[in-house]
Image (cartoon, rainbow, N blue to C red):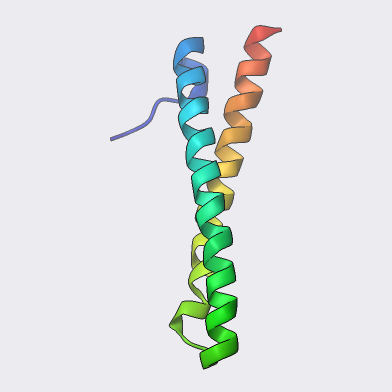
Length: 81
């Protein structure tokens, strides 16, 4: 499904997207932090394994969500003023 550009969305839709994305970023950040701690602990106990690279694999997804949240916030700010 193709997404509409942010400029075509209404203010209410942007605010809904912002709220959902803010929640997703928060949850993903918490899980990523927990994953980093667990992977560091496992690496200390067992040495390098596939679980060591899992946080690195999920980091780009987290960064893309943060970038999208910033774009939505900028679009809302441009419409409010």
